[in-house]
Length: 304
Image 1 (cartoon, rainbow, N blue to C red):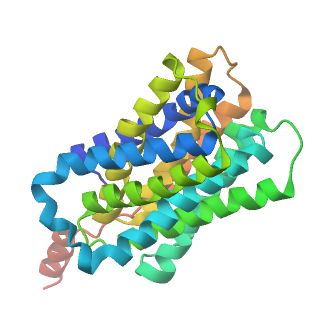
Image 2: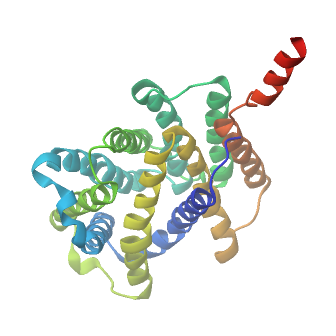
Image 3: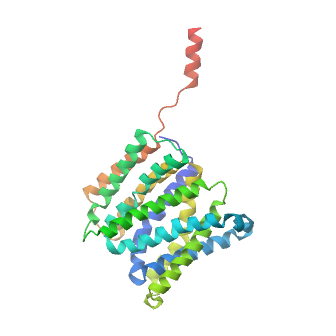
């Protein structure tokens, strides 16, 4: 398995933890707010906060040259991803929908091979498929309620737009500052979602209590700008498919969080999913045994 530096390991662990516990936090908050307004506000506020932090380096925005890239990324990574995801959750149980969304690492593996020139080995294919099966196992207990074809299509579209968004950012990473990309896509996409929510939902339906404020605050800081900045930073510095494989752990963390804080039971399917996900990450990041140049040199010397 490929070795990661301490900083990369910490970044991956932080990302998985931030996204993993966000499911429970957002679920708690959504009981007190319309979904589209909630998605738009946490994206918009998060983008503005990150932009304020980056303000001393405002020249890196380079708006005249990069505005098309910001807009495309905003459409894929914020407007479509958060928007379709929010609507899709209305049609499907959360467990099934999360499985469809986390089809994304498999799509990233395919797209990275097609458009970024990343390797595609049998080990990597087996690992991605095994990770998806692990997600199915982890989320199996959430497969309750009526299954809607519309919901399934929206779930797959969410995975597709997320994967395309990640590949696009990776492809343009040498031309655009990655942090400003996160800030601008969050501001632009969040503004559009907020306007959509204003037209389709009612601001008066928001209950400004502790669960809502905690969810909005978490999403506006850790959930959107910090997590996405970490994720794009990892993707831009390594193979997109290898980084994406670690996101298989997110639903697992979400289920474990529910077990600890919401007294949900630990099941055999959860344990089976854990094993499959760990094995899948190993397979996707497996690099084989490197050839030892010292041994080769010794063999040549002995032969002569």
